Image (cartoon, rainbow, N blue to C red; front, side):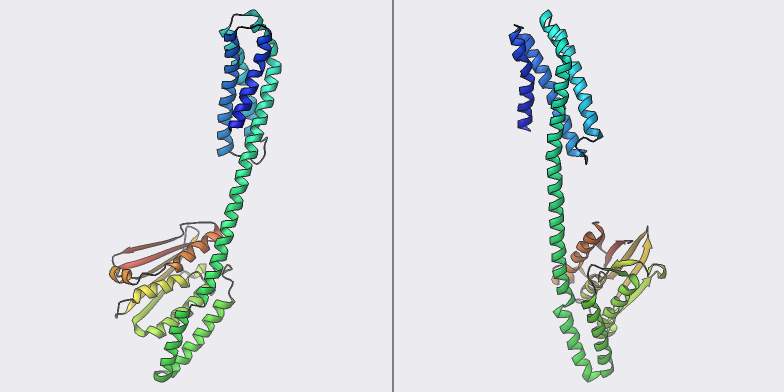
Length: 333
């Protein structure tokens, strides 16, 4: 910007060299240079705003060309009007009148040059931002992929399930076998599924029900889970493995510190051309503070939605009247 101001100043005082040769008064010379520099500076500020907030894909797009021609004409008009009215010197008046075509061409050329320089500068910034965004997105994708592997092979879930199976082999071998089959199917699906893939909602719900069935065997009558799903949307595509972290969070914090039966409801409906998922579980504020976790599960869902759909604020949580509500909105693919 400073370099452009210096360039404009140099172009403004260029005519003064010839004016001095014609023995024009110093006052007229100062007025001439000031008017040209002032109008050029105003154009510089305006074209800077245009490039910053209305940057076009082409250097000589309509906004750039039209603004350059418009302000070149206005600059010539102002130079002619102000300098002529501010000086009564015949020689100077004749010079202004005769030099207008050449001066207008130089102003137009200089304004186009300024526009091109500012466009190139903003284009460089624009490209840098896109590259930075792409790099950040790739880093987030890698981070989520690594964390998803950790999610798939959660030691605590696997160990708890194996401990439950071990105990059931003594007291209830039939349930132990059932849990082994459920756990095997669940782990096979978790390992084989592409974490970024879009799958039918029906398949995601089937996987979710396997997880719920495993947890119901572990906790027995203490855990009750109800599903309310619109059949019309079961063929819609959703990101794979996106619902299980929500239910895991609900089970973990719904059962923590409670010996009574815990009711968890899962509602999945189509609202405003988006899949609405609402999960409700009991909420004890004192117990939640004692068992506060990292919150990775829900954060991973937010990041996954952003990476796949480019949208934020699709997952919200609220706590009211002893209930914790998780609301996930999934755009239709």
